[in-house]
Image (cartoon, rainbow, N blue to C red; front, side):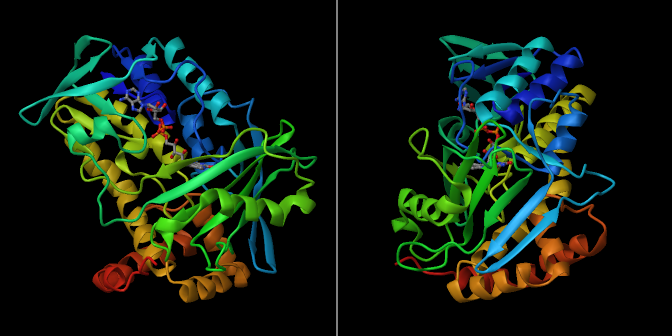
Length: 401
Ligand SMILES: Cc1cc2nc3c(=O)[nH]c(=O)nc-3n(C[C@H](O)[C@H](O)[C@H](O)COP(=O)(O)OP(=O)(O)OC[C@H]3O[C@@H](n4cnc5c(N)ncnc54)[C@H](O)[C@@H]3O)c2cc1C
């Protein structure tokens, strides 16, 4: 098996397959210890996936819940205890987290080639393998784990769907005496420099190492998205939280990156796409590490069971697990692209304890097609209702300035 990309998704696929005795070669264009622009937040769902992957997580900073802020309203909730996910998450700066995972892949026996860009070799619609460092490699399955879509995805026809939403987010690190806190903080009532409400949120994710990961993210469905200046938005947010967090100045220059939320294709003869490369990011919180880990493990499990049918089965099974929820999230993002609807939505989202519990489940990536209880019911209903309203939502989406 060949893997293009050594982020959490690619590393999870490599660990799983190599431990089962599959010959795995993984290509990572960055060097060992490369960083990834991220909020560094691991949801309870991600912790469950890391347990499933049998990876030691003792170095991560444990997180017990989420503080949601919308205007003057604040709610601090503990992650719920469920049958499927533990009641805690973590913050683990990506430079360390990703290195830990990729090292686990090497220990499992994967041949990991750092500083090596790989491109798929496509012949008559089938991916035969990759070309990397002047060499050709072939395998029954190539796993595209290259993150937000680029050149490799283009060759496979796995680009982002142009009419679907996507996100942009920026993050920095800063010193704070509150670095060891055990709650994430999300400010849901962001405004841009013109005072327009932004569908997205500002975050303070304490890393437990003297710093906090501070960032802001926004959805492409907002009015004025093309002119949105993320650096300004981050500075405004930092000014808002500076006193409460006794925030130091940014430790390094803030960095931004894309949040892909769709993909034209995620499988074909001889290949599958996992993680961000498949568009598996929750439009309602921009989180995707957990989906990356899960889709990576699933792709490898199916490959181990039967390399020939693996791409088809992967597409079906990953679709059953994620599609309805992510589709609902994308449709919802058209609604909150309208400032008025966003403002009323926020009042509902944190207005009552019951609604806040659903918001918490959404923000923790705890919902999918198998979720029991109120949160699951709300999402299944939303899938149906927003499905009917889909053409209207697209027609009436907020127009850019
Ligand atoms: C600002 C920001 C904040 C975020 N915050 C969170 C958060 O708090 N929690 C969360 O769960 N998610 C968060 N996300 C999303 C999260 O970062 C991604 O979902 C996650 O990194 C996806 O993992 P991946 O392995 O699919 O891709 P990536 O982590 O992007 O890894 C892809 C790898 O592929 C390599 N690569 C690319 N092309 C090639 C090639 N041709 N050959 C070889 N190597 C290649 C890249 O160098 C990279 O290392 C955030 C995203 C952003 C932008």
